[in-house]
Length: 294
Length: 255
Image (tube, rainbow over the protein chains, first blue to last red):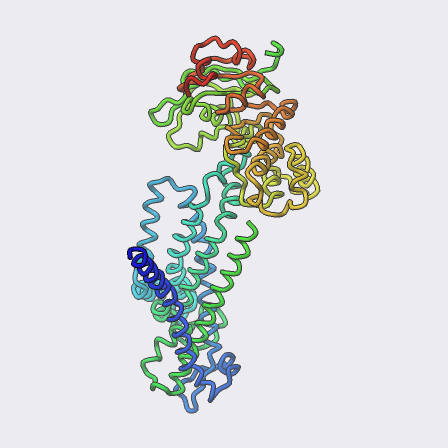
């Protein structure tokens, strides 16, 4: 019964692939359920609105205050700064590598950027702390150089490899015919790049930016080392800040499992999860819309 | 030749080209007259496409390409005294496979004029409409100008590429086997358009389809292995060629 055997084999393979396919989804769902289960208990002692908009994060005072607005603002300040620094440089660098650089330069630059991606974040954080901190302190005459700005600059370096390599792939993947067609109508190289290449590569470039920003928001180690970790709402980028991620990493070891501080940290995790989910969602909607149009 | 006193549009003198060390065109001297359909036939690797791409300097983009000799357009050397962007505006090309840009139908055609500085909406609309009418596509697409050009059929896409060239108001249109991927009806439409275009434009057509050359060509050149074997009045080439090789190719003995 050869046919029978083949059918069984076919069935098994199909189910195995299906299982591996849904495993990742199941794990994400389980993680989310766990986060909710651990984190939501904090809302028995504090309302969600108070939690999100409270201006004081004093988890070990008596009674404890769990207002995460300073942490959210810290994350936003650092992320925005890093995005402003890394997006133009990253896209420019991707365009240069993909469109302009001679072959040899391109290989060297690509290797360099991959190397940048390979540096562990704690090393980047350490370098930032030892060099960038004092530099910023001296330039702006501050009492400490560990500020939101230092965090932004450090994280910009970490987002750049992701942005450059994915955007560069997207630009290189634009079919040669588009370029030829545009050039053959008398477009200059820059006109072709701006109107045709960047248009055709736009979904890939946006994905690159989103992944880069996603990396910045989720980054913990480097940001903890260079931002000063003061849980205050920053008024300028030259003040120390503390991010959502750094708070979890720094305080988790000191909490009692099942206690309110423990639950509050998990609730921060939920907030982070929602933020990342929203960024990916926005990127997806945009990519989808774009694909339909072109 | 219809009349002996026609003006010379392209004057090519002793053209030699190489890709790396491989010579692709050998000692080519040839003239193309204004407002004629000049067809080039020949088997693969005979230098036909290289020749076309030399006329609007698209070969400049190919690494390792070298060129020697002169190509004069209206008596101006296009490699020495002509800015490459405005040359390509004057000398448009239609490729073998349709190459719509990833834009809407309207934007595909408006791309060229916009690039050359036209931004006024109604002017652009006028150009788009005129170009589409000239390439016999207007009636088929007028209600969906803002949908993606990729939704058009192959034949429609090719005519869109022709309209796109017309929109920048060229003097010469190069066709590089424009109907090799099209069905007979679409082919007939493109050929019909060419016959009308020659009143306004000079047309150089490279084709693998010998019958197409005989249908639309005023003069025909036969290329073989990078060399010009014979050039002359299309009727004469097809009825009484000078060279044996030309006759063999036309009658299908090789190639």
